[in-house]
Length: 296
Length: 234
Image (tube, rainbow over all chains, first blue to last red; front, side):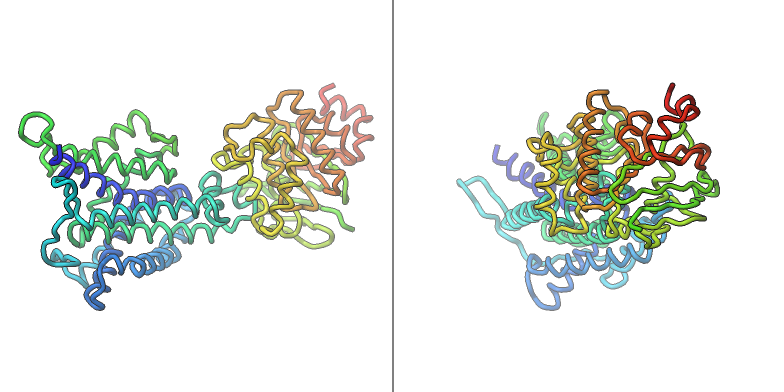
């Protein structure tokens, strides 16, 4: 029982919260701009490496470097939007998707150019987990990640429901034309969405780096589960994306549990396949997602 | 000279002109109605006035100020508000949030304006935390009109405010429009229920193929036999 909780359930929850931070951004961006942002995973990588630079230069812990990573990623995303996506605002969706694919390659290559392709870590050495009730082991970093993600999700919720800009963001996601007619500054809303989406991606990247390690492909590899989570929750529905992310994260980890016999049900190498299977199933049987979002 | 005037409007989508020198004028504190067959360009004219359709010739002026092809945000600040025929509410936002979005450019007015809206539409008050997508057609229309009024416009543009509503609800919406007009808001509306609309209007315009067929006082149009036969459904 404790083996299940320690090695499958807790890692699943942690992974779910990391996915949630990325998937919320994808969902918000889709709601406002109506295109699937393929460079979102690489924004995660970018944020993770900005934090690595802070960690190695100033010797601060990775958690402390998060605000800087968020800020730099947000500014970068607003800049990218201005120079690469804005000129295509009136074009067909597929053009923006391809443009974002190009941005994704550029971001990854930039990271590889400056940091190389080797695996990096924020902190060397083994961290002993905290032990509760003799058998329940929780790594301290997992508590930080889950706690941090919950705080950030609550802040995003308050932003979306209590602030003028947050409400305008939801309004524009509902109906961009009516938002324009109401006098809402639509370009300003788009900028805010990029800033928030990228900042959340940066946190997800740093958390992923804390949980495992850093690699120039780390974000790109998460793209599939991130989209699976966003689609599962109903695209354009940030709250659905959070729920979807938890389901995907758990499903990925729990699929490796020896449910039948002593062998893992699925080899951990097939984790991504689980997210993919869920995504395909949703697209076939319920493309609007659990919370009835938009259809791709 | 404090009227809303659109004169000789030529414009449309893409390369096509749907409007061929259409003109309407709404005097201060009055109601003007645009009627005409489907495809006459009634909705397009409303959009052209509100900067959503390119005006190639002609002029839109509000109290003498040229507002031709202005960005909707500028028009809202100048005192115009527009309620589209369809998709005129934010379905996933609550009633109150919908209304707040109408006052996006004057957030300091929100508390007072909300009180006014709930006075005008008392049915909406108990539902103010509910998502608008869950409301009935009539209530959604009230939210749509309320949203536009939140910016405290001098002129309100309504595109078929009673389309698809039950006769009883239709009457309520017409009552509301009269009530709004009495608070010194000029109203320009497109309406399928031509006869009912002309009965509450001061001025009327019959549009066919993007140009004015008749422009007269509402009373004269109602009395005109040709208008009655062709456009008021007998």
